[in-house]
Image (tube, rainbow, N blue to C red):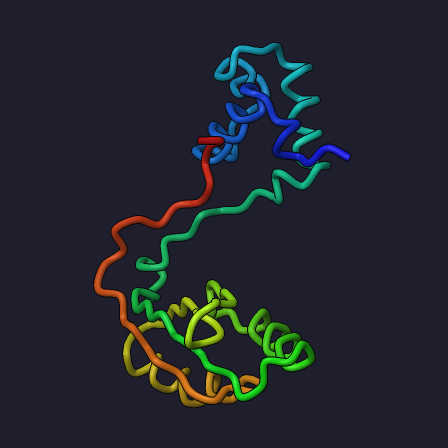
Length: 158
Protein backbone atom coordinates (compact mmCIF):
# COMPACT_ATOMS: atom_id res chain seq x y z
CA UNK A 1 0.00 0.00 0.00
CA UNK A 2 1.31 3.43 -0.97
CA UNK A 3 1.59 6.03 1.77
CA UNK A 4 -0.19 9.37 1.39
CA UNK A 5 3.01 11.40 1.04
CA UNK A 6 4.31 9.43 -1.95
CA UNK A 7 0.91 9.78 -3.65
CA UNK A 8 0.94 13.58 -3.46
CA UNK A 9 1.90 15.59 -6.53
CA UNK A 10 2.58 19.28 -7.16
CA UNK A 11 -1.15 20.08 -7.45
CA UNK A 12 -1.85 18.43 -4.10
CA UNK A 13 0.94 20.42 -2.47
CA UNK A 14 -0.38 23.58 -4.12
CA UNK A 15 -3.85 22.90 -2.67
CA UNK A 16 -2.35 22.36 0.79
CA UNK A 17 -0.27 25.53 0.56
CA UNK A 18 -3.23 27.69 -0.47
CA UNK A 19 -5.50 26.17 2.21
CA UNK A 20 -2.87 26.75 4.88
CA UNK A 21 -3.02 30.45 3.99
CA UNK A 22 -6.80 30.65 3.51
CA UNK A 23 -8.92 27.72 4.68
CA UNK A 24 -12.10 29.54 3.65
CA UNK A 25 -11.19 29.95 -0.02
CA UNK A 26 -13.90 28.87 -2.46
CA UNK A 27 -13.34 25.86 -4.72
CA UNK A 28 -13.53 28.16 -7.75
CA UNK A 29 -10.80 30.46 -6.39
CA UNK A 30 -8.71 27.50 -5.22
CA UNK A 31 -8.89 25.97 -8.70
CA UNK A 32 -7.76 29.25 -10.27
CA UNK A 33 -4.86 29.57 -7.82
CA UNK A 34 -3.50 26.08 -8.53
CA UNK A 35 -4.18 26.06 -12.27
CA UNK A 36 -6.80 23.31 -12.53
CA UNK A 37 -10.49 23.37 -13.29
CA UNK A 38 -13.08 23.19 -10.53
CA UNK A 39 -14.02 19.47 -10.80
CA UNK A 40 -10.51 17.98 -10.53
CA UNK A 41 -9.66 20.45 -7.76
CA UNK A 42 -12.75 19.40 -5.82
CA UNK A 43 -11.92 15.70 -6.35
CA UNK A 44 -8.34 16.23 -5.13
CA UNK A 45 -9.56 18.15 -2.09
CA UNK A 46 -12.01 15.37 -1.21
CA UNK A 47 -9.22 12.75 -1.63
CA UNK A 48 -6.85 14.73 0.62
CA UNK A 49 -9.57 14.90 3.27
CA UNK A 50 -10.42 11.18 2.97
CA UNK A 51 -6.74 10.20 3.18
CA UNK A 52 -6.38 12.24 6.35
CA UNK A 53 -3.82 14.62 4.85
CA UNK A 54 -6.24 17.44 5.64
CA UNK A 55 -7.38 16.86 9.21
CA UNK A 56 -9.98 19.62 9.32
CA UNK A 57 -10.65 23.32 9.13
CA UNK A 58 -10.67 25.73 12.02
CA UNK A 59 -10.59 29.37 12.98
CA UNK A 60 -7.17 30.66 14.00
CA UNK A 61 -7.64 32.61 17.24
CA UNK A 62 -5.32 35.31 18.53
CA UNK A 63 -4.40 34.21 22.07
CA UNK A 64 -3.08 37.67 22.94
CA UNK A 65 -6.46 39.29 22.19
CA UNK A 66 -8.06 36.55 24.28
CA UNK A 67 -5.86 37.50 27.23
CA UNK A 68 -3.74 34.36 27.05
CA UNK A 69 -0.31 35.83 26.46
CA UNK A 70 1.71 33.85 29.01
CA UNK A 71 3.46 30.90 27.37
CA UNK A 72 5.53 28.40 29.29
CA UNK A 73 7.32 25.27 28.16
CA UNK A 74 7.34 22.63 30.85
CA UNK A 75 9.69 19.67 31.10
CA UNK A 76 7.91 16.83 32.88
CA UNK A 77 9.60 13.81 34.38
CA UNK A 78 7.42 10.84 35.33
CA UNK A 79 7.83 8.41 38.21
CA UNK A 80 6.88 5.51 35.92
CA UNK A 81 7.44 5.17 32.18
CA UNK A 82 5.85 1.81 31.58
CA UNK A 83 3.21 1.78 28.86
CA UNK A 84 0.25 1.86 31.26
CA UNK A 85 1.63 4.95 33.01
CA UNK A 86 2.34 6.70 29.70
CA UNK A 87 -1.22 6.01 28.53
CA UNK A 88 -2.62 7.42 31.77
CA UNK A 89 -0.52 10.57 31.48
CA UNK A 90 -1.42 11.02 27.79
CA UNK A 91 -5.14 10.57 28.45
CA UNK A 92 -5.05 13.16 31.23
CA UNK A 93 -3.05 15.71 29.21
CA UNK A 94 -5.42 15.73 26.22
CA UNK A 95 -8.26 16.82 28.52
CA UNK A 96 -6.47 19.99 29.73
CA UNK A 97 -7.20 23.00 27.48
CA UNK A 98 -4.30 25.10 28.81
CA UNK A 99 -1.87 22.51 27.43
CA UNK A 100 -1.58 23.45 23.76
CA UNK A 101 1.01 20.82 22.90
CA UNK A 102 2.47 17.75 24.57
CA UNK A 103 5.39 15.80 23.19
CA UNK A 104 7.08 12.66 24.50
CA UNK A 105 10.80 13.42 24.42
CA UNK A 106 13.90 11.23 24.26
CA UNK A 107 15.92 13.11 26.87
CA UNK A 108 16.62 13.36 30.60
CA UNK A 109 12.91 14.21 31.00
CA UNK A 110 9.87 12.47 29.54
CA UNK A 111 7.51 15.14 28.14
CA UNK A 112 7.65 18.70 26.93
CA UNK A 113 4.42 20.67 27.31
CA UNK A 114 3.47 24.02 25.82
CA UNK A 115 1.14 25.76 28.26
CA UNK A 116 -0.78 28.99 27.72
CA UNK A 117 -2.34 30.98 30.57
CA UNK A 118 -3.32 34.60 31.35
CA UNK A 119 -0.27 35.50 33.40
CA UNK A 120 2.37 34.20 35.79
CA UNK A 121 -0.06 34.03 38.71
CA UNK A 122 -2.45 31.86 36.71
CA UNK A 123 0.46 29.71 35.52
CA UNK A 124 1.77 29.15 39.06
CA UNK A 125 -1.68 28.01 40.18
CA UNK A 126 -2.03 25.82 37.07
CA UNK A 127 1.38 24.23 37.67
CA UNK A 128 0.63 23.46 41.31
CA UNK A 129 -2.96 22.29 40.91
CA UNK A 130 -3.09 20.75 37.45
CA UNK A 131 0.29 19.74 36.05
CA UNK A 132 1.57 18.42 39.37
CA UNK A 133 -1.64 16.40 39.76
CA UNK A 134 -1.31 14.65 36.39
CA UNK A 135 -0.70 10.89 36.67
CA UNK A 136 2.85 9.86 37.59
CA UNK A 137 4.39 13.36 37.56
CA UNK A 138 7.63 13.33 39.53
CA UNK A 139 9.01 16.80 38.85
CA UNK A 140 8.85 19.68 36.39
CA UNK A 141 11.01 22.49 35.05
CA UNK A 142 9.47 25.60 33.51
CA UNK A 143 10.81 27.86 30.77
CA UNK A 144 8.82 31.04 30.18
CA UNK A 145 8.68 32.33 26.60
CA UNK A 146 9.46 36.02 26.26
CA UNK A 147 8.42 36.35 22.61
CA UNK A 148 7.10 34.08 19.86
CA UNK A 149 9.44 34.53 16.92
CA UNK A 150 7.76 31.91 14.72
CA UNK A 151 4.62 29.84 15.20
CA UNK A 152 3.33 28.15 12.08
CA UNK A 153 1.55 25.07 10.89
CA UNK A 154 2.72 22.94 7.98
CA UNK A 155 1.96 24.91 4.85
CA UNK A 156 3.58 23.18 1.91
CA UNK A 157 5.51 20.17 0.72
CA UNK A 158 8.97 21.70 0.95
